Image (cartoon, rainbow, N blue to C red; front, side):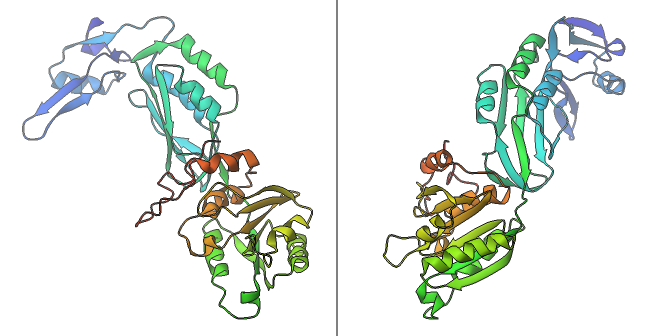
Length: 341
């Protein structure tokens, strides 16, 4: 520490909090430890009796916490984000669009294991909204070695840890299956649920048919919908092992690449995901019609953002894949679907 006259301390770094006491009004720190003194701060410091203050002596090769936090920001921030102002070694990141929040988990763990710095964020692969806080970063000590910050930056490479992918798939096809619906034995209560869910991501239904359990008709409709411009094909029902349930066979017969038939998620174990070229085709089990949240709610944001889903990622949903069926559903602010890929 070094003692300086307050008038000479502009640009220097406070090494302790400065408290302001005004009877009946405030008793709090008017400046925090690590604050860089500005010209306009001098009268305030004098008003609280600080004619002299202790400051950090600048050392070659050392960075103030706010300067180091700027390097963390560079490591983290991507397009479709904005950064808050640095404060006490902290910088927060916010989404500027509605989209899918993505994380490079390997890099995130690398930074957080490096020591003397941290990044905390929302869960990845989830929908976020413009203005929502995505992450907070902090440098732990008041000053840190510049070499250390550069080393962690180099270790993370050129691509930032976070990204927000916009929802780009806007045209959906819904193929409602089942003899009971096709022949008018029961009302179709499945399609309205799907339409409501996809609408939240800016999708519209541009193709809809209701078919009986004829796998050839279902296959034909899937291909017809894609030919007409559907960017995602959603088949409802017919996903069980019953002999009359033909939807999995129909999707397979389109020639699409099957990613998985089955997912370690309850509700939603009989879910099917396939890609016809780059167009996702999903087969949804009946639980999507009546359960509050299912596998479909987990994968839909990724489908809407054109974020390809792998078999390994679906397999990783087992941890956190059991919906606890809370009396009041708080999804996505809960552990459901927070797998470990």
